Each structure stands twice: as structure tokens, then as C-alpha cells.
Image (tube, chains in turn red, brown, yellow, purple):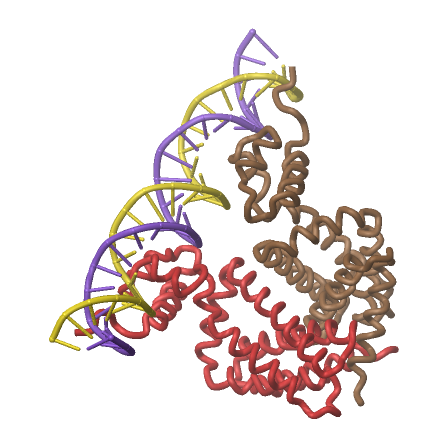
Length: 188
Length: 188
DNA sequence: TATAGTGATGGCAGTAACTGACATCATGAC
DNA sequence: GTCATGATGTCAGTTACTGCCATCACTATA
């Protein structure tokens, strides 16, 4: 006889997504989520450091993917192109789960707390990209600034991708944003 | 006879800064802060929405200053120059209180929760700057991207300013970052 | 086959952030 | 002199999160 159903973490994520979507993040308690997943509150906090983290457990994988892409880019690639291409590559990953991404973003946009968590994940991403650039020999302040600019590009592209009524390609939007950045930054 | 000492909000801020600095944010309770300020916990939460907000009460004034500067910039000014000049102007404001800024940043850097709050304030700033640009007739996606890029410039400049051993001029660092951005973004 | 872990969970008590409802009382308007 | 107001206090309650110990199917090893 099996003592526990498998994949408790996955059940917690699913329960949280449903409840956050139905009632909003603020009006959902960890007790509710745990009960719906057939677990206790204590177990929820063994899997996730806090009530918000349940929506961000995939962030580390994304970060690793981006960092690897930057580190392994051809030596001739410029910093901004290295990070942009990494973002384009990651875009394909989101593309497969657009419905999920839209729903998740709707939940996040409905809660300031969740937005804060999203922002610190993106800031961590910026720092990791800057580190990856330094591994490529890029010096300060270029590395740090390029990392931050990469996030600026990603944020605006992702926002457009999620809110656009017609299905669009996230990678393409990233590429467009880089072009746009070049226009913006061009000296008069 | 005066019923209460004046400036309770200011006393709470001062008490919080000292305690956060001495023991760190996490190991400081709202009860401690309130007691040190000669007030109760309940009163703390009447002045600040939460334990973190006590370090960010000046953010709104900064945002208004930046937005006004952008809105009132000469019509010929490009979007990126409008926001950059606004940041340069705000730089002077910080310059007068460098010691305070350094201490405050040290506290923030010591706590993930405080970093999250700082990031959402900056994100709000990016959105407000984008709005200001739209008032100037700037269209999407330029407005949103320029707002985000402005924050990227500010973050990296401010970080350099705070960590530099020799006293430097924040406004100058902002200008340098814009130049740097132009190099980064330039197509090969 | 017996024994000794091991790992994922439950139970429970405790801390601290935050909220709502109501009481108090100096101050200032009339 | 009365009365409204606003800043504060008091207190009870909810909920996020933590530490500690117990449980017990499963596994490796003697």
C-alpha cells in the first residue's frame, strides 16, 4: 500500500493556481491550498519557502538556460546580442504554454506581493546575465548595464506577448524590442 | 499640556533606520520600533502600510519630480534624453544626503524583502515615466521600453554611486550610463 | 529474515505581521 | 461652553511562517 499519493509538489502548484485564479491571491490561504492538495500546511512550507514561491518554482531553470546560452555564444557575439539571442531562445519555451503563461500573469498582475516576487526574480536574472557576460570577458559597467537592459527588453516583450489578442511569437517581439532600443538609444 | 510629542512619523522612521541598521531588518520587530519611538504598534501601521514602507515614504515625491521634469521638457527633446535629464536632476537631490543614501542602501541590500519593495517602487517609476512620455505624444512600444531603460540606467548608476569609494556625482554617472548604453546598443 | 536507517509527511505550539472595532481626550471651531 | 475632529491607545483576531518531535512505508544491509 502506498503511504502518500505521488507528486505532492505538483498537486500544491495546481491547487494554488486554481484557487489564486478563482479568489485572487490575497483571499486564498495556505490552509486552503494544502487541504485541496490533500496535504497539510506544514508540508506546503516544506516544498515552498512562502505562499508566493509556488508560482515561481520554474524560474531557476529559466535562469540556467539563459546563462548557458550566453556563456556558450560564439566569441564574436556582442554582449547585447548574446543576451537577446538567449531571450529569443527562451521565448520558444514559453510559446508552447501560452495559455498557462497568460493565466499565471493574470494572477500575478492581480497582486502587488506577487509582482514584487516576479521583479526580484527578474533582478536576479539580470545579475546572472551580467555574470555570464563577465565570464565572456565583458567588463564593467557594460556587463551590469547590459544585464539590466536585457530585462527591460524581456519585460516589455513579454507584456506585449501576453496581452496581444492575436497570437504572436515572443522571440520575434524580443528581436523587435532590440531594434526599437537601437532607435531609442541612437544619438540625435 | 501637549498630549503627544510631535512628528510621530519622523520618530518612527528614525527608530526604524537605527534598529534596522543595528540588528538587520529581519531581526527587528515593529513592536521594538514603536516602543523606541514612544508609540504603539497600532500607530505604526496607521502611518505605514507595512514594516518595509517606513524606508520608502519618499518614493512618491521622487516620482512626481521625475514625471514633472519629463512632462515639462522642451518639445524637441528625445524620449531617452527627457528621462535621462530627469534622472540627472534627481541625482542632485540624492547628492545632498549621500551618507543617508549609503546607510539606507546597506540596510536594503541586507534583506530580500526590502529589495523586493525597492524593485516595485522602481517598476512603478518606470510605468510613470512611460505615462509621462505618452503625454508628450510618444507612442508604444517606445514609451514603455524607454521607461524600463531609464530604470536600468538609474539602477546601475545609483549602484556605482553608492559603492564608489571616492565621492562622485550621480548626475555624471547617469550621463555616463547613457553614453554606455549608446555603445552597447549600437548595431555592429 | 531481522534490523536499522531514511525520507516524506503530520501534529502542535509559538512568533510576529497586520486588521477591525471601539475607547480616549487634547485641541480648535462655533 | 459645547461639540466635532483627529491622533492615539487597547484588544481581540487572522494568517503567514518556523521549530520540534512523532509516524511509518520503504530500502539497504547484515
